[in-house]
Length: 601
Figure 1: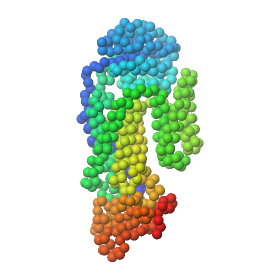
Figure 2: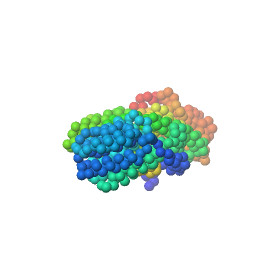
Figure 3: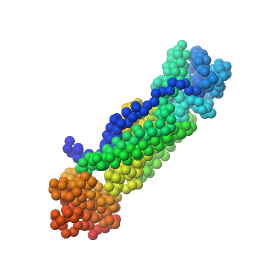
Figure 4: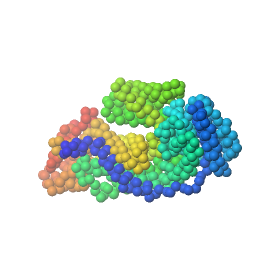
């Protein structure tokens, strides 16, 4: 156990990741969740004007009286509407995509449109959803699609893309299912199982009534942004993010102190870190929320959303691979992310083209296979055939999942807004680490924090599959872990290119500190980066080690030097030089590349 503890302390990226995860999770449990609960507004009871497209499956499988019963139930649905307030449209899909009537408040027109429907052909659900979306583009009313189907679409992938496009535009999608319809698949379409209603023959009207209740009750409740208003929503989410940022920053401060055998947290350091992190978190959270509000009103096609999702997945995969695969590591992290995003986009485009042309014959499998092969080939060029093949298999196994928002609570555009917000949080946290990680370059700190925030945001989105509270809590842990991991990782990268100080605590335990213009303090003071015991005669700041030009300089405290009869207070250290102070030994180290920039005297 002791060896494991020492190993964890000397593996700083893992140490920072664990501290960040724990800190963010604790803040989320004890501060974030109570804040959200206390500031949650009750759903509005006022019925909002609705624009509703009745999207009806008119394929040949709807024969034997099913379509007739649907038309009867739909007519009763129309009768119950207040057409002085609402507008309805009728769209069908089967042998053709038919807009029987655009949005109208005329009951006779709607009933005539329903009467005109007849069953024939296949189930081009994706095209039907696209047509319904088009009917809703010109209205400012709350938009809804009520889908009725009894089977599986010709292409499940394309239908999922179209459904995602609807949700990304804040269009509520509700499904009424009967016959052989797969309710699990329809739950993926709607993004919420509670918006899928199954009805046996003879009960279609009851199913329409349930869909009606969902439109006028459930969907009026607060969604991700709710009916809070811009300022209230920004402050609410900003406050929640501020608590998470505080948890991460305080945890990383303690992680750094743990790494350097110091007191985990002092009042002074804790106070400054708390104020700074709360401000950073409020800024990041509010910015992400303010960006979220307008971005979700942008119209974007499902195909574009799918390509973006694959690009994000590809970037995340190659980003992770760049940490341990030499060929990709040569690209550096930014290059790996870009290459992965392009590879993912090629794979998605290949999938879409294949599915569009051959989906009616082979379903979605051929498209998924082609997309995975193309992606795998791209990764092969980067990492080698084995890793390319493995990456392709991963995407093939994931299949259509990459085209979905990971949870119904998130659409692709919402994901982008949240990723930007978390990236800003990571950037600010990364910049703040320079106050307790000496000589970490600002550019590296900002980059590491930004990448960590972005990866954490993707993990946060994926964690949403566990539901609201479990998803937020597990997502918070992932976010904290990624931010801590990446900040420590960029520090390790800097250590590989610059001179540094290696501290020998014991024969089997060593830790590293960057050298630079900012002195590394050694002494018994709480502010010292390398702690010594005052009882052994060490003054508060016994010595300072810093770089001056091309030299590494060690400057001793006058009082300490006098107690040791030292004549020379300032010494120039060469690579490999050792100095023993009490029970610890410090050593100047450098990688071969950085040795060239260090003056040897």
